[in-house]
Amino acid sequence: MIAIALSIAPIFLLIVTGYALRRGGMPSQEFWTLNDRLVYFVLMPALFFVRISEADLSDPDLIPYAATLYAGFFAATVAGTVATLLLRIPAAQATSILQGSGRFNTFIALAVAEALYGAPALQLAVLGAAVLVPVVNLTVVGLFSVLLPRPGSPVLLGALKNLATNPLILSILAAAAVNLMGWAPIPVLQETLSVLGQAALPIMLLCVGASLKLRGLRADWLPMALAAGGKLLVFPAVILAAALALGLPPLTAQVALVYGALPTGVAAYTLARQLGGDAPLMAAMITVQTLLAFAVMPLWLTLGAQLFGL
Image (cartoon, rainbow, N blue to C red; front, side):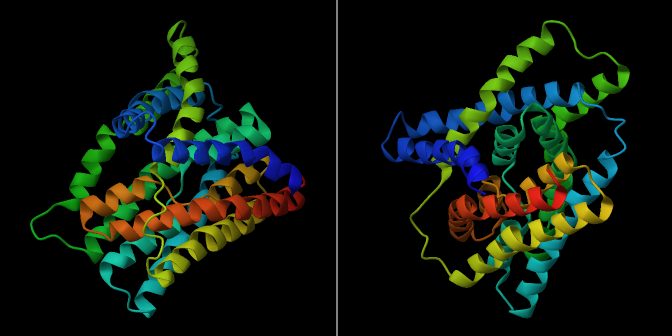
């Protein structure tokens, strides 16, 4: 466990550095806003395109890998939904619990996978994001439309439109097309995007840290505990069980477990603010889960390494 903790420690130190820089006013709030856009519209799509265009999409393990990831996500989301119904939690708080239980921080997943197991794991992590991101977004927005209906507002239609214009989704589709057509690697383009992709991980980790907010952590403890339980306990436990049941190869299973042990994603705050959820509670959940992941992730990954024989 110590070896795993030491391997991922630089990732969390980069996150802390991003928080410290923003709190110190260096360089400026506008800088972090522009950096977020750079990562979202340029660096991450470049990384996704390079990795997916060169991946082996005929690998028979991809289907059970996707099934394992979906099992963890839907189990955690259902657990959060059942908890909110049984405890009669107000709808705005309920949406934060659902996001906090099921969403994940893709940036940290990619960084942890590469730090622990190198380029093959990074490739698997990118493929994991490719199969999860569209389904997660549609599911979460669909739950918002049920819990917080807006008369005359086609929320699901808007979600589909956002997916159709999402730069990550577009890069995934373009990369898959290039891969299936046998065109990869494309000279010059591939090398250029590869260089951009290499810049993605450190910059996006700094941005994750800059987005954390320690103020407001005195939010209602029950919703925060329910979300943390769904994300950091139910999600990884189901992934662990599904990976063993489906006989995933050790590295593939361990990368799937990385997704299970992640804190919830920072994009959840933006969605809560846009669709009428409890945005301050969501911000507190993101911060608390990111801090908890320092301790929880090494425990799950150590258990996974032992059970998977990695």
